[in-house]
Image (tube, rainbow, N blue to C red; front, side, top):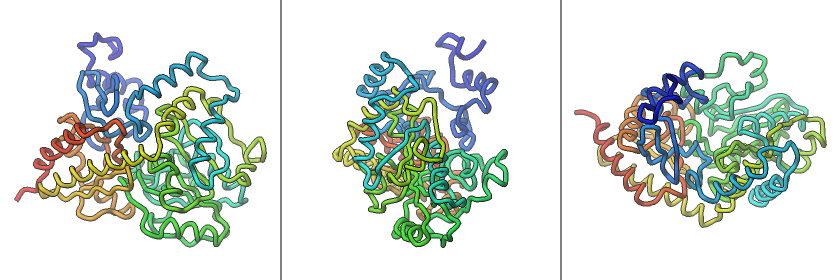
Length: 431
């Protein structure tokens, strides 16, 4: 009997995971969900609302995964649910332009300094893959520079030395990626400005590294990248799939005052539905078909449900909302940090605005090697299960950021900190 056929009383996480492993590689549709780096059985979500997720066994968790970033308003926000429902009643996909595509493009461009045109796609991976192709087409150059520990999706040329799920699996790349696919990819250490030459089409960077835990850009790093790209005529691409419209209204360009040549977005802009986007100046975007010779297309690009959900989400994200989101992250950071300090547990919680990380180490990492040492020391696994047993869900891997939402209130923060105090006591080093 399959898990989906069992009566509700017999439907357990274990039964569903066992059945899933027969039908889906590893039992999951994205590797980190398999709990491989933390051990145990994944919880299967039945429904969610606000700051909570509920599994099929009826357990409720305060959720700091929030779909790895899209649920900035919290799960099942009424405005988003209404927008999706209204859109779905009119049809789910047309293969033709819609007004909402124009409206969400306009909303993004008005928010982001320097952004002039965008193209909607269906995922962050697709956005970065397409932007890299556009950069090569616009410059006539072939090589790209990326940074160790930055994750830009699973396209072949960008999987080398990636963070997030790649690092979580203990991989430096991926089987099936040919040497030729990465021959034009140069990997540099994060927070160090590389010396470029005239073969480099584009430098792609997470302006805040959020796929190796959370690593902030060092003072002068982004500015240095801007200057070096200008010196040699290379393009600078900000991968804002995570930071875009989460740091602030205008994303990293507004936050840091550094304007790249190109952007990639995802997560927040889809309101929880699959959507990504890439954009640049009118001059660079003119190289993209049907205006120019760089081809890119997508049957579901600009999907009417996703654009409706994205517009609903962004309508709630004004300056005040970002102030509240940052205050929530700061409150969580202060409470948990004190819990670790009081217990004598070595832990740091870097924060950039509303983005938050956690490393079990004395010193805040600044690049991938030090982040990897902290992530792989085994402490996070014990922390994760201790918190999960107490009804608090963090990401099942030490390389992910902590995502708060506007639905996390004082009661949820207080409960999380209380649970953290109990877990920290269990993590206390033994004399």
